[in-house]
Length: 331
Length: 296
Image (tube, rainbow over all chains, first blue to last red; front, side, top):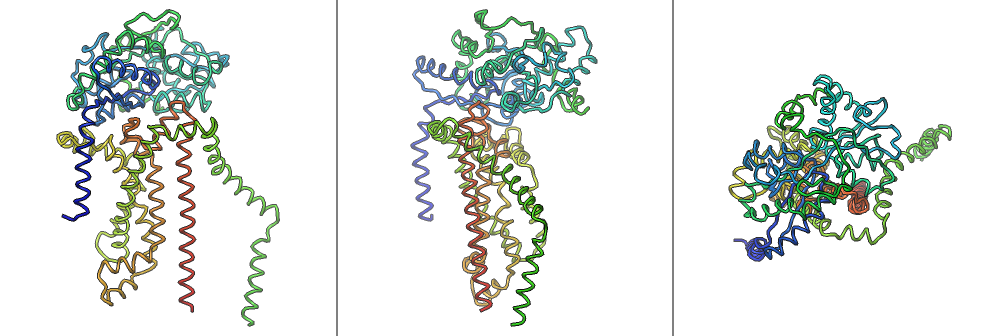
């Protein structure tokens, strides 16, 4: 063996021997999440790390990955080693069971409240004074109104906006043909389709495009905090859609990495009073505690289940290749 | 004597003719060019640095010394430190084979080298996900052997190598073609071995072109976004390169920090340009001195 090579080999072996046991001691979790939970987890993770340290003495590291929800779920299916996945639609987690057998199909029944720890309705954010006078879904298709919605193909946020528009027509007594006509008209008013909710926010708030942004209530709260409450106004339509945010651990990954215990505790912490309170603080409507009535405005909202049955059906009708959304966009 | 006089006269006429347009046309054209350069190059450049320093030096320094930023820089350096030498070796080998030898499938090889230019970087990233991803060809095998390629450092390095593949070869091929093979043939006739020929004849001849190719490769390796974005997984502090880190910071409303890290990439671009100019200047000086020797 060449002496230089031998030298490097020994360096490598020693470094392996030194660093690997350390790596094994400090458990790491990877939480793959959607776009607009960044700030929530910036507060939630340190709280859990502290809690876990007090409980077990173990120091955890929690890594975060954020992006458009469907894109993120796709990455996990393709091998991104997420210990836990925290999404805004059950369908994105179903994908892990359907496409990659990473989790069992009945994952939702493993945690309280069908694994839904928080919810957030889709609301409208308009510019100060509501110059376009936008109050309901019908106002979005008034001539000249530009609407910012993230791409429903890659973002759960966009899917909810799409389904909210569709459902609002159905709930007012319209039929599917009427709903399709309305949604088709709506997307003619969308100048750009960003890949995720956060991109759409930047387009609307930072770049100043569009008259109204459709996004989750928790994102709207953050926009007002970041850009100043005097720049924008929130409009809650008389009837809207409620996004339910489910979470799950990824069985194949945690069993391989030996992190099931930590991942399970991390998920359960979402449902604890402390976790629920952090969610409420970040304008995510808690599901297991009663938030103070002043914290959230009263809304009249429907869920996907109530109007569309289930996500499988929604995907197959609306968002598959050549589905209703594709037909609308091509027209 | 008469000849030179004629040449001087001719030169005068030519130079006069070249600028015979009315003043407003000349200044108008110069003005348009300057305005265009200013609008599309200088203003964005200035914007990066003003935005980066908007909240002062302390915020700027904090942003570029923060743990996630440092790990992004480290990853960017690792990716280019692996990609540049590999592509250097490959580029020289390919250019040598293509310009000094005749063989079947040569055109095919040239086309292959250009492939990364023709393919969109996003597709390049997807290729690696399709091959090494969990649902890909080698997904199961990699899991069984506890190896990670995509959504980890190896995937990022692979994607970087792929997109920077053509630069060195593309830079060398025209140069080596122009130089022909006479000097190599002479070396062979005089009894030089293959290695000796490479080290003492071929490489010195293409020195500046080679360095130029390496500079370009490095600039692209450090700046690549699309392909790396697809295979990264976007894990903060672990699989984010500098361009990806800029995007994350920007998406977290942390504009000052985003522009601070972006300003580092911009500085890299400026250094690249300076090096490039220096190399071009050296190359032209070398060429001039060779010409002098030949004429003398």
